[in-house]
Length: 154
Ligand code: HEM
Image (cartoon, rainbow, N blue to C red):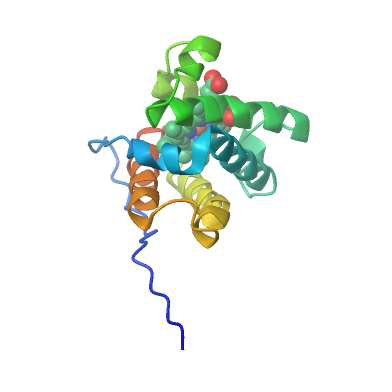
């Protein structure tokens, strides 16, 4: 019999109003494992998932615009994982909280955002494109930093 066990923990940290918990960047090995193209594919899956999600209303309203937005996001995630600074080159300084300020990001929206990201990560897990340790480090970054983006009560 072939038992497989996973140590991955996709639990979501409870949001505490007024707290910006300390953020640790993802392990750069995650990007090395999945490659830049793998990160672009991940963000494309994520943005297509958001397009079909209950928080679609806060994002661009056409699939074409979402494809472009996903690649801006991929530029950022490649950069935060220690890759080339594509986001700085194409969009300027990250200033993530400022960039999210025009959108109503509630604790509830953050939950949908994280669950949609977890779904987009599944092919990486299934195809063992990265180690559980590196996937966990990427998830931990999302879990913590997404709390910083909340700017509105439910
Ligand atoms: C780890 C936390 C997060 C990171 C690193 C992140 C990253 C980004 C990046 C890089 C952009 C593109 C900005 C630009 O091109 O100027 C963006 C845009 C956006 N994000 Fe986030 N984000 C995070 C959390 C969230 C959450 C929790 C929500 C809502 C639930 C959200 C909603 C949006 C929206 C509505 C936009 C504008 C549309 C777009 O360009 O995608 N983000 N985010």
